[in-house]
Amino acid sequence: MRQLPTWGASLLCALHHTCRFRVLGQTHLHAVLDGSHPGLLTTWHFAFPSVIYYFRHLNGVIMVSRSRDGEWAARMVHALGFQTVRGSSHQGGAEALRAMFRLVRKGHLAGLIADGSQGPALVAQKGIVWLAAAAQLPLVPLSLAAERAWRLPTWDRTLIPKPFTRMTFAAGEPIQVPRLRGEDDLEFHRQLLESRLNALTELARETLAEPESAQFWARGGGWVKTFRGQKPG
Image 1 (cartoon, rainbow, N blue to C red):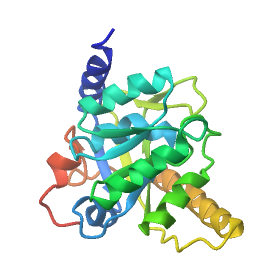
Image 2: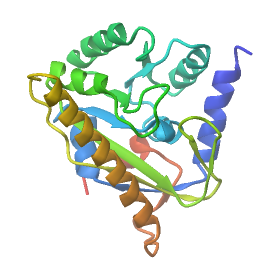
Image 3: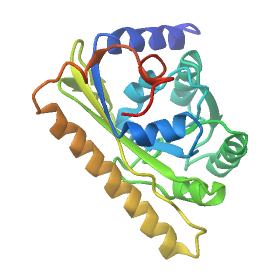
Image 4: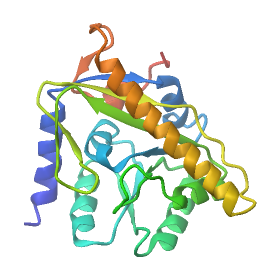
């Protein structure tokens, strides 16, 4: 049982390595991932498996819940080269945000799930907006779509791509969150993040309907293999 997270990470990589990927908004991602313009990557919970695969081995930090399922997930993302802080909106969330804030200040890439560990699905939570304001780092929204995929019967309908399918990742313009002046300010930026993520999901879906262009699609790989050291395109 202790080996299951490692096996899960290996299976996740084997499955995704058969897929072909297209990345929209590469410039926004390059700015964050090469450290020239630090920011906080954020995505929906349903996209979690594919996101941790594609951005593995970047020494990023992810918030994972303290539940039993969270323990399994934490061990799996460790196998993929991530660090974790433990907490959620239901338990230890404030402590986890402070821990992530300290790591971000030290230069670590941070990734956050916008709708949290238990949802509601596709509803951005306020904690991520608070962290962006406290750290004075922009939120960089990211979503994805797959041409063919399974959707698990979970609260977020987790997306698992089918073998040999095409996937699109879509990153949007950074959202600058100023020092918050009150609850209305917090809610405004929460809704802005939510709408941006939903728009990126739809953009990724629309792109999959376009005619395939071989120069944009690559099998397997991931950000480190495909884009590290390259200029944004």
